[in-house]
Image 1 (tube, rainbow, N blue to C red):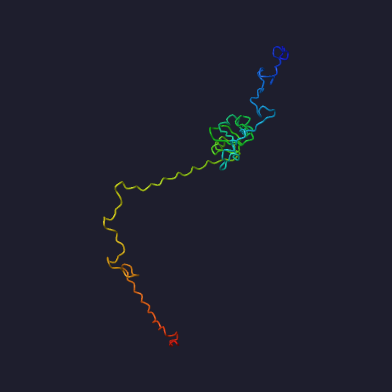
Image 2: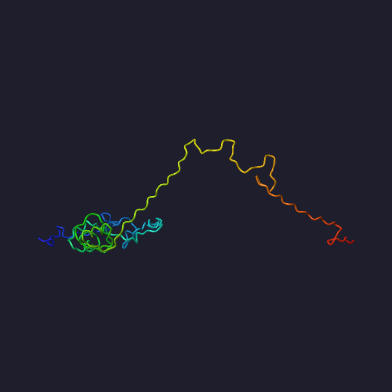
Amino acid sequence: MNLDEILHSAGKYKERKRLGRGTGSGHGKTAGRGTKGAGARAGWTSRAGKEGGQNPIFARVPKRGFSNFKFRTTYQVVNVSDFEKFDDGTQVDAAAMFAAGLIRSAKKAVKVLGTGELTKKLTVIADKLSTSAAAKIQKAGGTVQGDIVKPEEPKPVPVPVAKAEKPPKGEKGEKAPKGEKAPKGEKAPKGEKAPKGESAGEEKPAKPKKEKAPKPPKDAQADGSPEKK
């Protein structure tokens, strides 16, 4: 007997689900579409992220700064030890790695790292190779095609500067004995003031006073003749 010879009574055809034929049928009223609304209508669709009219999450979350997520290059990582499955003299490129199951896509960038050991003589073609990976491939007698990335130099560790030791509590620097002050410029004895323009310890010549011309009498004119009345 073949499968197409099964009779109808044995389940050759599955009965169609009859919807909307009353609540007694088990699939009446809403006909399996839940409650009333847009979802119960024909042709209803919903875009991703819609939240029923309120402000969606991608609009509520603030966007700050710059992200390199869309512009960065993501590499498929392969180690040197993975190339042991290839035969001597094989050209190992992205297509060969994809065929061997080492990477997921032959169109994306590949980076070879130096983990493990390699004993086969291969020609490795990749977008980037680490310095250790290139050295191991060349040591085994193979060749390398691609950018060799040098490891970044470690940043210098800042040397902590020793702080000056503080004197223990209760001990302070030497001070002048109480009641004595450090000597300053000599001052005039108490009760005597130094003349103006002279500072302590210096003598300056006194400035001669200007002699004022005598005022002419009120009755005299400018030329000296008596005023006429």
